[in-house]
Length: 148
Image (tube, rainbow, N blue to C red; front, top):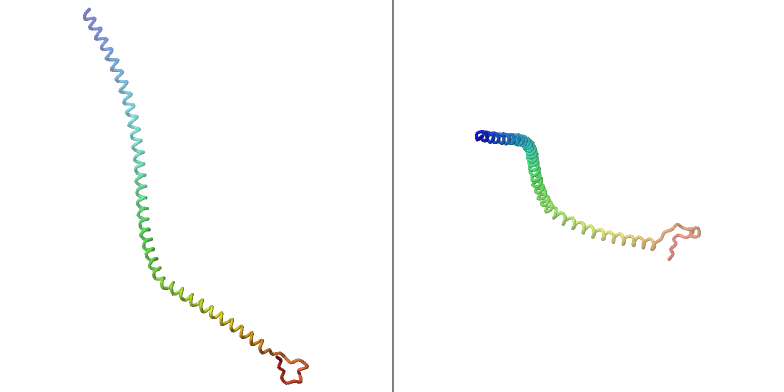
């Protein structure tokens, strides 16, 4: 009886252990399938992140090239600006000379206009002062006729 009770207890314990073993194997199977799924997801994510990293590297490289080009353009524009400033300085005396010539031209134009008007006045006075016309029939027998 005691041996039977021990056998039953051992058998019961063995059954419990087998049930626990089966449960642990099921859990291990689930865990290993979850692990496989997570490993696949991790690999997919790594590939995705590597693609994004390469894309970012290409973007950085392009931006660096653009930055270098823009720096070169800025340097070139600074040179152009300096040359423009030098040209402006060189033009300064010519601008002053042009203004002087324009002032002199305007004075000469005013003087020419004044002389022209004076000459027109004199021509008109001469015309009125001594008018010449052909002889009329009644003056045909006279030599010179002067009227005032």
